[in-house]
Image 1: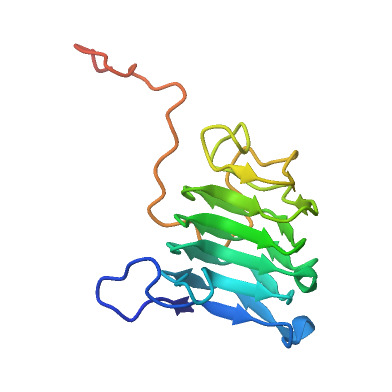
Image 2: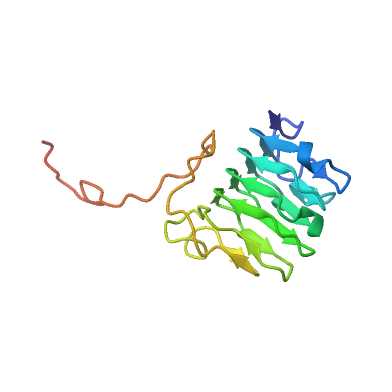
Length: 189
């Protein structure tokens, strides 16, 4: 299932996004196997917004949001199971506020402009076992974290639990190219 803008040439923020509110029947709610893109207008500031709700969010690609790919607000979003997703090319991959503490595991944070996980609250957010677009973890040359985020254990390669790889991701930097970068007059064998 693809949730996207209805315009011929979509841009981030073309539509509001998907909103789960505190009235959501969390045990029966799941967003799985979707591509959600070009949302995040000022109505929700996210492609997917968990407003005191904690449905399962897994096996999705959430990309090109004007603001957050996923926004979690309030303690009703505690323990929201956010796993095996690609958060790609958003302003923020995940933005938490109002003491929300979702469980963020086995996701790929890829080229989010400000950071992969931004925690605006004081309660610690668990974001372990994720890939941060750098084998050395978050806050290196890939996606960053902000605020009280525990990302101490991280994946050094993209998570493989995601059913569809992210589209149009840049290639990894070659580690031992042969011939060497910039080599000239190389004899072919």
